[in-house]
Length: 390
Image 1 (cartoon, rainbow, N blue to C red):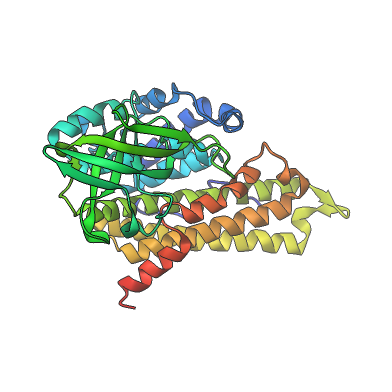
Image 2: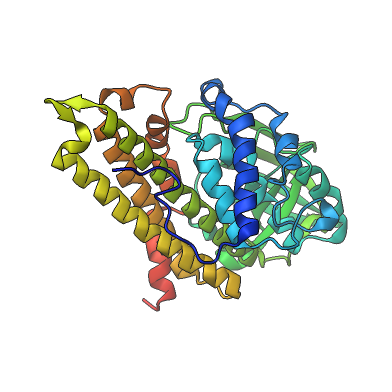
């Protein structure tokens, strides 16, 4: 019996030679610059600022972004992004990827909906790793139900006056800008807008949230806006039509999370198989006990199904007609698969899996944030049901 991270991956006919070259290049970077220090950074609760320029130099930060701003879009497709999410998950420290790649949810609203001036101001420095951007959606009283957010932006002349707060914001302590959801109109989704808010303005403050179950290496913050003046030209998209900006962003975020969660489940499988082949109980290897063999088979079964679903959804992305309902259900499928694999790997590893310092222990702690972030499992199911006319 031999399964590891790579051999547990189903064949993907969409991958070409350039995709395999990208994986090899990225893996070398991760194995050299991140893997040896990942556990240390997780315990310290932060990753070094020098990692962002290094990630930019290898092409990770700019993957899929316009060349005019320092990115690399030519020849880049969804499969390159899938590979990036897989390789970052292989580290087994989710907070590193969450913090390092948070521009993946913070920057698209600017590039897709912002003015040329905003794009030129923000994108080059973010993609080079010199400055940082985050996404501000969740509030103390509104999370997955974005239509209920309460942070207000009242227009006064050529500025909006912003009041309110955001919480659980990944990368919020480091961010130079935050793509922020605000209420500019009526209640519900039709009164929501998106603003790019710089963090060096009067009235902005933040506090760190560092007592987390998982994602220790990712900085997380609560943001406060007290009569913060934001130029009207920082509006992303049209006033009161920010819900479209948010929903478009969610599709790609959920796809990336699904790819990462499946890969995290595969890490658990790899660790479980390796341990089962080494550990002796009752005079034989763990791998020779039927109950353990069945656990491993069930993990592989669920991973196979999730990989196939991910591939289907990425194919719809590439064809230009992604289905939000399928993407929502895929995220649920991936989080349930990750949770199952983490639990079963823990059972196979036993006491050693419970000790800090191994990938399974870290992944087990990070199950819940993946099942909640980007839209909780319950909201995802409801979203899919509504889209199917229920």
